[in-house]
Length: 254
Image: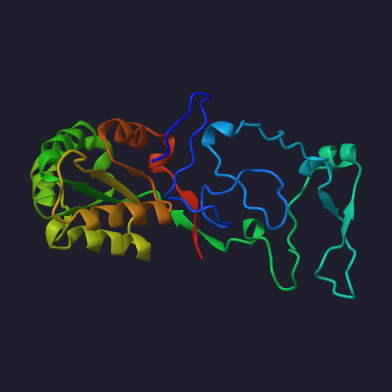
């Protein structure tokens, strides 16, 4: 260890040789060739803050603009870049085009989406599904709107179908129970265009053993653009709509 002298500098440590290249063995600054400098102390340094970096021109002021319709080296896909004045660059509105900087590539935001139309008939095929804790709620809702439901074809899974058949006193087409594949059966019917509307009271507070099937069924309803409701409020709005008993043309994936 170095010992400090009265003037605040450190005394030379005999353990540190006065040679070049050793850490702490040189004094900052220039020195003559062949002359061994004396050891220096950290107290001899003075902190000098570095000057702030100030770029000569912001990037947005010198950003290149693309000249439409030009080519580079005869390549029609490449766009020539030219420098514009600051005001023109700042005021320029960049519009998406269907062609990129390379041949054969298109902007994915403007790729045409292939769709078709499907007609939802007046007498609709309605699927009614409910998790265990929501079966009673679905039965009460169906009884409340019995007058409108019995005009349509009703489909349900397992025990929900039995409950609705007893409550409404109408025939109900029943699939398997949800955990045994009933939700997948309904999702398959939706994808094939054999169901027109879905009422699915699922329980968001209780994990389900067939949770993946529940999500897949909801996804099929959204993908194939059929009306669907997952709670009593949305179901009330849906069944009270004037379109409920009318033909409706909807877009579906092609």
